[in-house]
Length: 259
Image (cartoon, rainbow, N blue to C red; front, side):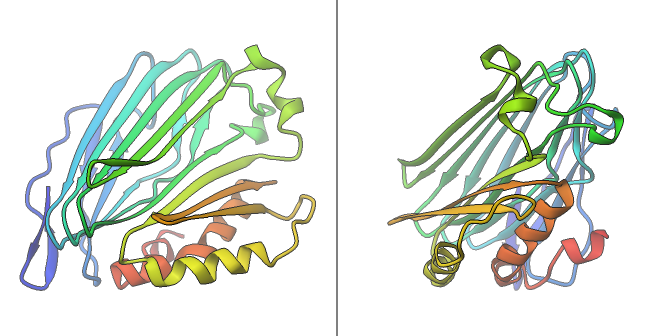
């Protein structure tokens, strides 16, 4: 639970049960930072993790992870995030990308419920896996579901399933080693949406190795899709496009401290 206390957002309650740990470092901005960590360094065996997040009225929260979400071999795991963002509150959900190892299975479901006047920046990314070890899109199944509702009205429902059962992933995703879906919505980011959409639409699509970006503008917000030749290229493009929104929400750039 994150609440607004005087002029700052404060984590008033946080409890993690193994293997999930929650870290709440101090920062110089107005938002509270919460990092997810794991005792096993990622998803192992049959982990079934769930996280409930509530951002109180007027509060600001940055929700991320300590490192890439590794999904180890022979793993059949699941992760569920349910976040409620109250009126005039802002949530930035931007974890490191998922990295599914060869033969692994992961089902991830993220649900964001926004009250009237709430804002959300959500970044949902995955990579091809341990490319340096010769593994490339070698997971058995990676199922990603993302849903966002505002004032009880569904705004965005997205589902992706990566599985070799539908054809060789390595061939279908040739030249792509990292992908991301980004959603921005709410009054906190409203002034940035049209300029960002126009910037992306006016930039000609080029073949990889340039990161490909598409933009869809909706009355309620903006949806971006990215495909990159490397994880580093994806990270660089995301930061280039979203740092202004990040600093607007948090008064600070958390990624500037991470590397």
